Image 1 (cartoon, rainbow, N blue to C red):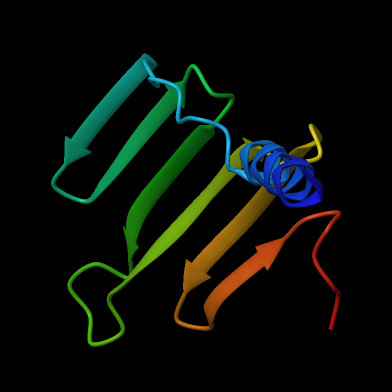
Image 2 (image 1 turned 180 degrees about the horizontal axis):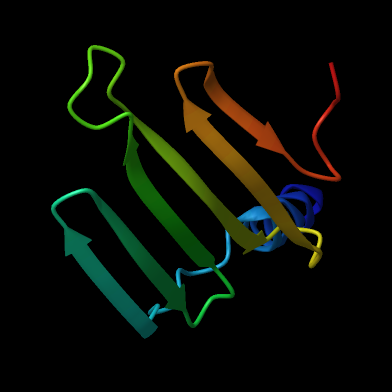
Length: 104
């Protein structure tokens, strides 16, 4: 009898510890624009994610031509809090900033 009680308790613990089933995520908003010297897009989904980005060429036609990308993304963490990361990516690399990220 003890074995049955322990076995049932273990099964219940496994069920409670199992990850929640994935929900179907819908795209709520999608905008995109591509031009010869840049692009921008925005995607928002029903699970609370939002991603915006814009890229532009700089110093067009020179030896220093580069793309500069600016954007942000947000998501809802397992703790229910919304996290946002703003970033720039250019000739100096990827530079993210967010309240939850360590500062160097």
